[in-house]
Length: 162
Image (cartoon, rainbow, N blue to C red):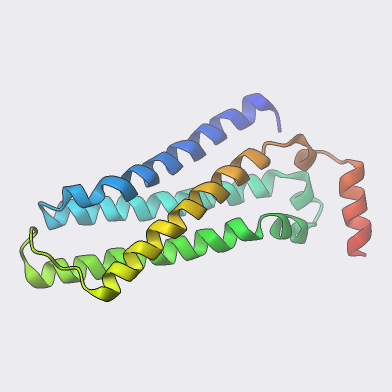
């Protein structure tokens, strides 16, 4: 892909990643009002969905995908797909659980942390680091011109698949 065409896509991916990182880090500081926290959580989940959509749109623009070698892309980026799915499920689960507990107590400053919630909170934060790493790596790797033109590497992969 041309650098001039890929650069805005890469900036968009970085923006979505930064928004997710910012909301993941600082959303708990906005717990003074449940509705504000709910809106921030919805924005974070939508950013993750948009990030996945952007990656798949870039997949669809590759020569490998257009040549019908989708399995090569899936194999090369399977960990990104898996980690992103796990991270999204953990985020939604954490957000739903926290908002359910907050609305049950109806006091934004109340301490609502139980053992299960602490475990999923910690797991979500650990998986978020993996998500940031794999997503950024995928965004940078998809800028490689090998994915957008016919080359010896693609022909070798095609021969392996036959």
